Figure (tube, helix red, strand yellow):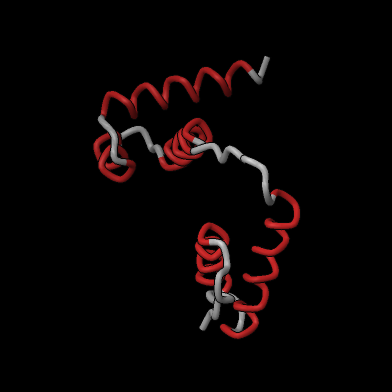
Length: 108
């Protein structure tokens, strides 16, 4: 269980809880709690008082999705991939075409 100190800033508490949930998957929960709070404190020490922008990472997510579609594509599974990745069949065709072109450019 994560015991956040009293009067701890809300954003840092939210961060510590998020970190604890992730760390508890691979560490003993008590150790995960200690590490989560230490990491939250590291964030406070490094960026506290400043305004930091955390990007949503849309282009990063798209590139990960596109790479996954390319890996999973077998020439006949456009509809399945569209369902799996939450997009249209047309988008799957576009991804495959774009990835094929990008990878073929690297051959020459």
